[in-house]
Length: 257
Image 1 (cartoon, one colour):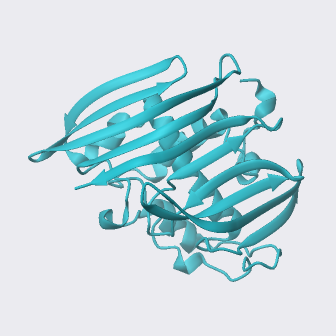
Image 2 (cartoon, rainbow, N blue to C red):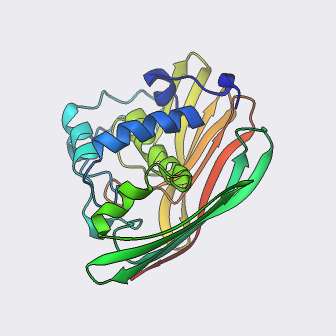
C-alpha cells in the first residue's frame, strides 16, 4: 500500500485511520499493554474516565484522565463479559473484504476460529484467507497462552482491527460508552472530522452501537461497538483517503460453549 494512505504517530491514531501501518503500531502497543489479559477483548472499567460532553451536542469531549486509560489497557474485562475469547471453547466466523496491500485490488476473504475443549488445554483451529493470502494452523495449549501464540500471525490482523476501533472510539470520545446520539466534531489536518453513534445493530446475535467517522463528509471508519465491559467490536470498516474500502471485518457466525 502506498504510504500516502496512512501516517504514523499519535495524531494519525487519534484521527481514526486504521491503515496497515497503524494496525502494526497498535499490535506493538497492545502486545505490551494487554500482556496477560486472558481474552484481550474487554476494555475494562472505564467509569473513572467517563464524561458527559458527547451527548449529541457536537462539542469536544473532555480530556480522559489517567485512571480511565489505565483501567482500559491494564486490567481487561472479566472473561464472562468477553464475547470473543480465544481461551475457551467457541466458534467464530468473520467475512472479510478490502484492499490487497500489494496490488491495491479489492479482495474478499474469511477468518474462522474453532476452539475445542482439551481438558486443561484448548485446541484452536484457525483458517484465514484474504485474497491470495492464506494461513491455517491448529494448536493445543493452555487457554491463557493461545492469544499470544496467534498474535503475530496474519490471521490476527482482522482481530486487531476489531479491537482497535473500540480503543480509538474511547480515546476520541473521552472514555464514554457508546450510545445513540453521542457525537463529536473536531478539526484535524485532514479536515472536519465527525464521529457519531447512529443506531443499534446486531451481528450474529451480538448487539452493538454503530459508529461512523467522516472527514469532510467522506467515510473514514465505521464500527459497531460494545460497552466497556462487553468485549471487542463485531464489525469494523475502514477507508483510505481516496474513499476506497481498506478493510471490512464482519462477524457472521458465533457460538460459545
